[in-house]
Image 1 (cartoon, one colour):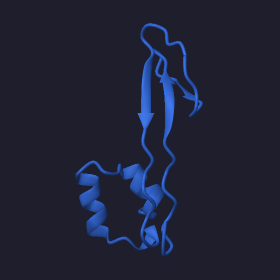
Image 2: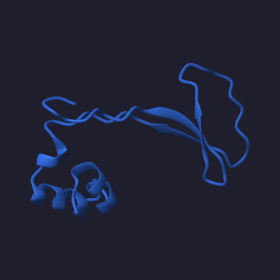
Image 3: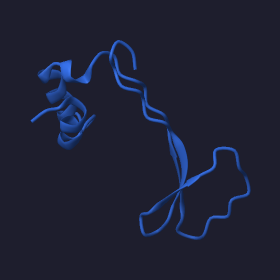
Image 4: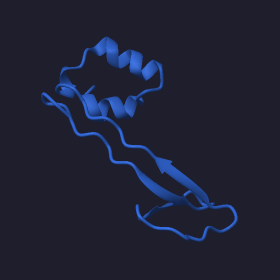
Length: 82
C-alpha cells in the first residue's frame, strides 16, 4: 500500500480436497498428482490500499458491502467499523 494503505494479499496455488480443506502448493513445481474430487485453486494477488483504511468514507464502505466487494465482518476488520 501507499500513503498509509495496507499491503495487498499474496496469491497462491492450492489443492482443495473434497472435505473443503486446502493445501498450499509450491509455486515452482510440476507433476503433482491430484485425486478424483480434488480441485486446483489459483488465487491471484490483491492490490495494496491507497491511504489509511480507517479514513475511508462510510458511504463508500456501504457501497462495497452492498456490491459484495467486502463482507460486513471484513469491513469491521479492515476499516474498524463498529
